[in-house]
Image (tube, rainbow, N blue to C red; front, side):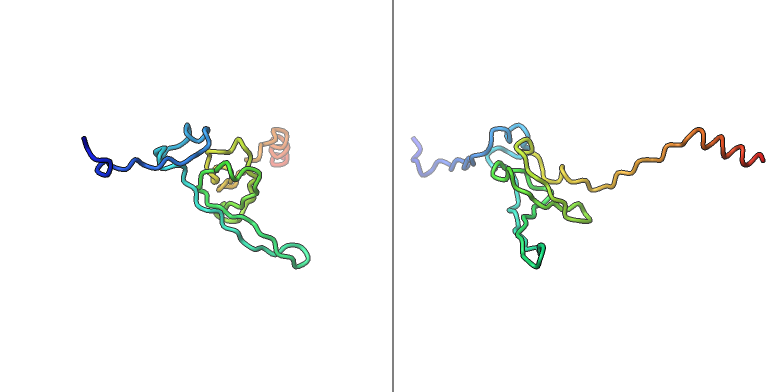
Length: 121
């Protein structure tokens, strides 16, 4: 029989939220990927300093982050995201838009008729 020291070590299993297992693209034994949240001092009202947490778009939302307000960069500005329990297992970047949504202006059919009448006269 092989001695206990010659057997390969088993990978360490990290505890994680049960809902993370179905969403994880990584192997389960590695656990979810999340960069540590970075506390940043920001000037508040009347010269006071406030501490905000900033996270990366690629980080998976962990159960410990529920009820925190985390700043995530949209490519242009830092956008606050309030973490809810339903968000666990998703990435922070999914909740911040990187592109501006613009609606196309609908053509008013009456305005087209008025324009045609003006040209005719």
